[in-house]
Image 1 (tube, rainbow, N blue to C red):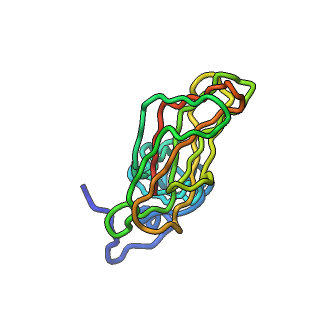
Image 2 (image 1 turned 180 degrees about the vertical axis):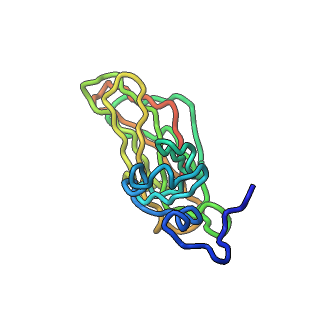
Image 3 (image 1 turned 45 degrees about the vertical axis):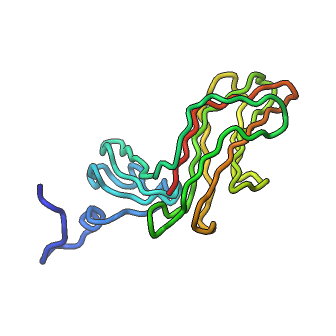
Length: 187
C-alpha cells in the first residue's frame, strides 16, 4: 500500500487536496453529484455540518457514508406507560470529558415507539440531569413499532457526569405508549 501524502513537486489540484484531508460541509455539499464518484475513495473522511458528525465513505458509487458517532448506551427492554402523565421508564448516563474521551457536542437518540390508539399522539421525552424540561420529544401515532430519531446540543454543558432520563406518555387517559429499542450516540 502506498501512503497518500504530499511530495515535493506535487501539483495542488482540487482533487489532490480533497483526497488528502477532511472535507467539510453541509449534507447537500457532500452528496453525489456535488462531489463526483471519481473524486471519492473508500475511507475518505467528511465532517457533515448538517448532522454534526464525522463520516467515512463506505461505498463510492452512490456515496454511502457511515457516521463516526460514539455509542453512549443502549437499552432493549420493552417498557410501557398508560395515560397522559409523563413517567420515567429508562435512563442512561455518561461522562463528558474532552480531555479523557467523549467531548460532548451533540446527542443523538434512536427509539422504537408505538401507541395502542392511532387516534392519539404518544410522546417519548428526553430530559437531562433531573431537569423538568424536555431536551427532545419524539412522537408517534403508529400502532406498530417505528423508529424515531432526533438530536440536541450539549456543547455548553459542563464537563462531568450527564444523565439522560426517558419519559413516556400517551394522549388518552387509558392509552398505552410502548418503547422497545433505545440507542444513544454522541459526537
